[in-house]
Length: 79
Image (cartoon, rainbow, N blue to C red; front, side, top):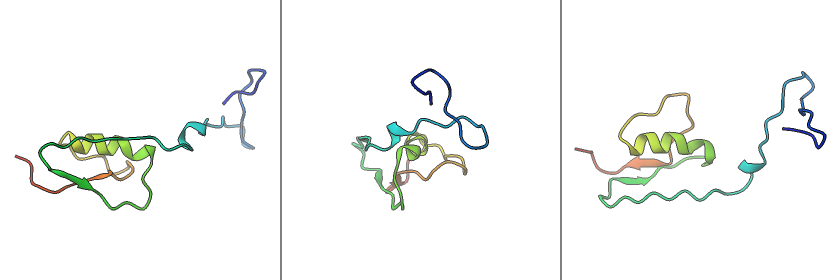
């Protein structure tokens, strides 16, 4: 995150601050499921960070444990 003069904005420890303004607005995410295999997972907080796990699981793979939870749940077993 840069200041107007081009210097990096840092926290008290001197580490650069991330620019998070893009994550404060809702982001549309649409999944088309013509086979009816996917449902909406019950999650406490759905956010931009959950999209990676969602895409991985929609492709038929299991997301790594350290990812945010997926936004989908399988409703049928895949063949």
